[in-house]
Amino acid sequence: MQPSYQPASIEQQAQQHWDSRQAFRATRQSGKPKYYCLSMFPYPSGKLHMGHVRNYTIGDVLARWHKMRGYNVLQPMGWDAFGLPAENAAIANKVPPAKWTDDNIAYMKQQLKSLGFAIDWSRELATCKPDYYKWNQWLFLRMLEKGIAYKKTQVVNWDPVDQTVLANEQVIDGRGWRTGALVEKREIPGYYFGITQLAEELLTDLDKLPGWPERVKTMQANWIGKSVGVRFAFTHDIRDASGVPINDGKLWVFTTRADTIMGVTFCAVAAEHPLAAHAAQNNPVLAAFIDKCKHGSVMEADIATMEKEGVDTGLKVVHPLTGEQVPVWVANYVLMSYGDGAVMAVPAHDERDFEFAKKFGLPIKQSIQIPPNPPFAKGGEMCGTAGNPTLKKGGEGGISPFTTDHWQEWYATKDGVCINSGKYTGLASEQAVDAIATDLATKDLGEKKVQWRLRDWGISRFSTMA
Image (cartoon, rainbow, N blue to C red; front, side):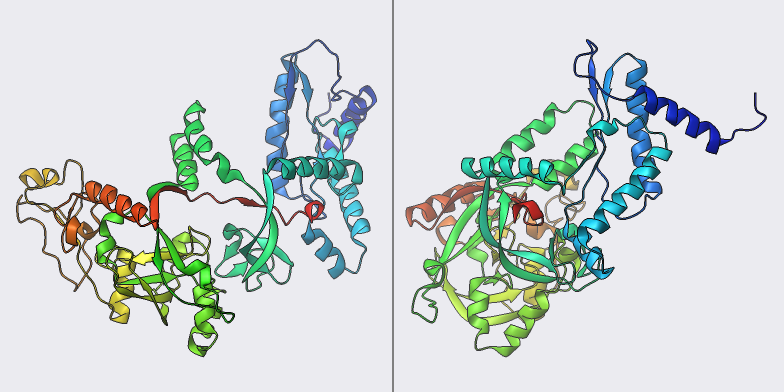
């Protein structure tokens, strides 16, 4: 026995022995139980790093363990090699993209082989090769036929350096995660997978995942984001240059708090909304603000904490139940990608709207109050159905009175009673939602609706789909 381990010689001999015996090749008819171990294919950037080593070691341990237990194991390897970053890197290095990619694959393949992983190299593939991507295209065409995939125009995050679309998570402080370039919000046509068609199934099937950590299932449920509310329209007679009413004369919004509709004092739209674009044509201040918003963060967590900013469009829409004129603002906390890109603003009962109204001197109209002797404040303790953190000790009278001086948590209660709400005054919040939804439906201006945080999956980054 050698006194020390000599990896350069010992491992090379072992690997040559495995290769000569095709030790890791999966056979089609072995009579053994099958085990398929697929790790994420690497992007052929040029060299492996320790993250690759960690990732493929985990998969290799599983593959070898199952092989030792008598399974017919298939552990393949491929190369995620058909992306715009590869093409841009090749251009930057003044090398043809095909040569750049093939050279990187050859080098990284030798690195992987030197690690001794139990990979069936007879099944190696590269996504940039026609014999692979022809099946991508075939499958995509079938999806188009079935309506699973479709084409539409939508506002996206555009990296001007990589010349590609970025997911929200790939935009950090307004810049592309790879290039550091200022990201632009552009409205461009693209292909999408209609995964929202499966939103309900995706949510309910989380309960069919035994062994998954609850925190992961909760995270997924929040990402899918089911919201039950009312979608309704403010009407208007705002027309484009050709005299056609914009969006058929309706500003659509979605709310989970229809019970507060009588407290609306303004509407806020995203920078990309058609009404914003229309108003900006003759308003340089608004146009500059819209341009600023297009380079801002798109992460919901960032938007929730950023300073609220906005500009009055000078436009007004009509409240569907009161007939009042409601001003329209462009606000940086409204996302075009969520719902219809517009919100009804109720400063008295929404903290974001409250901040915005205080900053710009907009009216704050209370339309919900805590009922007398609320069950959740019994005995003065924070208990029961509301669990509202501002319900202080002392029972009745333990709730601070409404004031526009500062925000209080109870303003957002969903267990209140309508006040200052015309015919709905005195109704509990849940009753008011039903009554308001019915009245909006009668006017053909709204209905109850389920909305999802989940968005259809944009796939236009894939060159084979272009």
